[in-house]
Image (cartoon, rainbow, N blue to C red; front, side):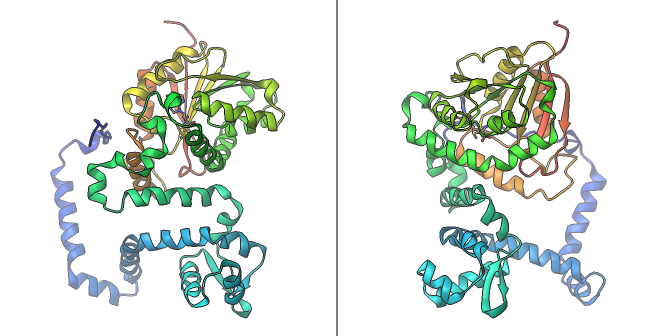
Length: 395
Ligand SMILES: C[S@@+](CC[C@H](N)C(=O)[O-])C[C@H]1O[C@@H](n2cnc3c(N)ncnc32)[C@H](O)[C@@H]1O
């Protein structure tokens, strides 16, 4: 490791020694390990499903790499779009993909087994339940292709842990390692990640727009705005809003083109800059920060939150949206495995990290925000949303 990294803060109740609870968990571990219990559980129709489910989960963990590669293979052969038009048989798919029928059949049957494709009548293949979103949302396919970089970096997980910032992912994100990236890195690098962010932002944008009412605001500043996908969709929905964008200069050049193509430039002002060294523009009564904080170490995020607080008028609002840790969050009410992906993605990228909502709320409070709350949204895998305000009375 070449640079210092931040630790995640675990919940306070994990710091307290609870001997009885620890002993109970240890007893449970021994119980789970018992071959007799395993046999008994399998022979009992009431408990069989529990043991079967645990075995399936272990199998899934072991074979996850194969599942990812099957998915990548289907994306690269453009199978989802092809079969969305109409189901095809092996011979027809082989002609279009130029993969031999025998080998292709293995891929197709594997894709069927993990729900991406389905067998249809006349020995044809159609889309499975999990294949439909891949056919209709290009951002998912773009992320599948992008993840290949991460998986190359992680081929040897232990070597990766000791040398995480030497791989393709670190090179992909110029600003994550170089404060002067905007001056030094080629424009092509900014276009590449900005295109990916714009296509993968679709779901995050929907989460935000469906969860927060922007009609009470006059002007929004989006910090780390990328190509402005979120704000251009917001501008179309809330016609009264003026939009300010802040991002590195090579990125904002792309945002300008995006707003122009939608006929929205009259409501837009661009503020190219580096939030590590430049102040943020004033004038917005709402500042948004979407998928930015997790790219950066605690110190940078704390400074940025202070700048955001300073740039707001009294009573102004701040909305932060990004994927947040579910595992250590007390309110997690769904699957939490997504944390593993983001922990490793952000490690490969640079010095940022996945934070819990509670950690981010503490940082917001330290920066001076009040009335901090979680804005409930339906799909926390894509992003969770926090809202804070600058106090109405000046200190
Ligand atoms: C992960 S992208 C997210 C973009 C967009 N908000 C989205 O959700 O798709 C992070 C953005 O922050 C910008 N950024 C990173 N470091 C920055 C800095 N020091 N100053 C200004 N912008 C920065 C990047 O250029 C990039 O557009």
